[in-house]
View (spheres, rainbow, N blue to C red):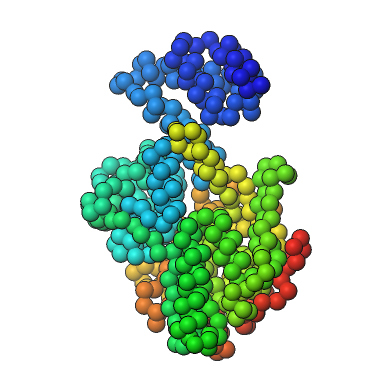
Length: 460
């Protein structure tokens, strides 16, 4: 069937040989049979005509591969901020990155209005150490303007050999002029999970990303904390602040670690048959001990899946500020040896059936940091959240859009109000002095594991 359609397509195009090749390439990129109508044929003819005109008349001889790649990038970028094309090199780099080790600066970025925008720096990387902040705009890379580059092209320029210098020109809210930040590229080894014992009774676990190493790191952290505390733990703090997300299966696995039963997350694609529900397996590794989850405006995607699951099951108290609001799933679709598509294929929903797309997760207890005067305008809001990204998916339930909040976390523990409030909460101390505005359903103390939501149940 596809062969027959391809033949019809070829016959319908009044193109020279080069135009026919270009249109056929685009036909395959569009998925063949899905484009089988006359209007699509006309648009593919248009693409072939433009392709030929550019090849024939552009001031310099362009590379065909570059033209095709840019056309695909434009098509995907027009869908939403998270769909993109990766050539073979970028695809290989992505695979390395999800394994938790790659070369670069250590920042999670997106594209907004043609400018690279920082979602969050990754802990203990050149970007973090140089003071790059969530919400910063990268307008130049080594003196070259970012405007006009695709996100992938900009990322490529920021990557390079280890121990080579790079200068980023930053526009930051509250600063009257752009300024340069000089960094040295390094091998980014992501330690996805860090932990330490607070006092002798609280286990602190920091998850900075959801890579292939995350669940393994969490298991090791839980075992280590249990040993160090001699079994005297009152509870755990799960710190997901400024965690930009990562692998869906790791978010599900981390949620399952603390749940005894019930739904973790559901995903819904365009067709009803594509819907999936992930259910927790029996066994709460934390054996019902109290949990506080820390979130902020830099907590996105996989972080929000974990926070939403534990919140809906009332397995943890969520403390901090509203999350980023990215509730879409991207599927990596390899295309032979040419690379891969990162394509938004589904939305995800928390166990109670709510969508937090372009809205974010509101904490049970709203605790805002004291931001230093010189950073107040910079970090009052992080990236602005998913709702601030041009072309973002709308909330399917027509919920009021929000998302985005403070992403500031003090380096000194004694100044970290959210961490201090979580510690006091777990130890049964009052925290009224820290809470800015508790939500209607705010809890005074974390709830241990209860019956939760049964598979298929919803909460209104």
